[in-house]
Length: 551
Image (tube, rainbow, N blue to C red; front, side, top):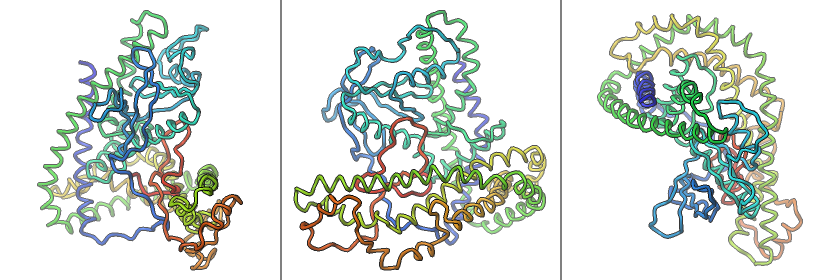
């Protein structure tokens, strides 16, 4: 079959890249294990760990538009794994009726925006004045507040709610699910995932694609399936659409149903192939481990020798191009990034403040409660808090750095590729054959380019911090200069709302010592492009102030 054949061919081309990167990453992990770990700059405020897989984050009756084109009530339960099963009834032990995997989804709340996106995804551009009812009809919808979930290569989902608040709550958890399903797998530090990420980048570069890819989301199988579908759709469109003789709405339904069927076939084929490929690499790595541990110094010397040869050839031209074609634009790009990102952090802080105000008002009649005590002890850390300011600066600087590298490094690689492609092939011969699995010339070459770019990016970010733009700090001394050591841990509590003071007055005779840490969720990566309302930064009375790498 055409779809399966395309998937098998793609995996056959991708396999050598994955095998190479698996050995390189496996070697690097053993090297890290044997070497002294590098000290990392830590945030002051403690981060809350991810929820347990079985922890219930959301459960509610929702109205779902079924395949039979009628609305049915379904019981939705979202747990800590961020899957979204639909149950017909809430009875323990009954399997779910559907399991929604919202990877790559876009959430919309109006029919007009949803239909515009559907039309954009449909390969034939047709305009007429007929009101095509591809989406559920507004007339007869049992609630005033619809939710449209548009999924790439899969059928869409439709929900509606009778109350605005319930819609907002569902939008929040659905946005969380999309973000986690998009990124959680790719955040893993396992050999399999890190090897896959590097392999897919090199594989796409080999095909001439250097820019960031919006479909790099979900599991390794889904990413490869997305790659296959991008290449498959033009031929499918050419072979199929001319033979579809029906109204536009029916043509859309047939087209999207065919695309979904193809996507599932491709995924099934790739799942089997990737499972076999990973098992093959695991066995090979197990056999290589003895050689790696016994010859670590010789392998590192071989890599150092190759890096020296590469630097002699690459360094001067790459630095010249970076200083002339990239560095002059970094400051202006950073300026564009700083405003909206810093504004988002400030909005999160203000939202936390307002929700604490509301919480105090809600509880001031109920006496001293655990919730009120928690708010009282957390508030000093959030009102004019040096800890938050420092962590905010630290995380924003990391975001700015990663964004600048992500924007400019593909341009550098693409520009220099024609110059060094042949030379890189020749340098492979300099690696001792027994160590060629662990020393890869393209990895070293890209590492050199990244080092050159990093120096320029660090300069421009630190210059912004030196100028105190958007309250950025240069280092921990900036934090200490704003507050004495004692004030770091006992900031006076100044409520923004008088009701908050009333909530505490007369109820808490003694103010407990301000804790050093507050709980904060780990979700700090840039969210996927979702048009729904973002998840509330307040979860478990914690405030998002940033996080590490994807995880």
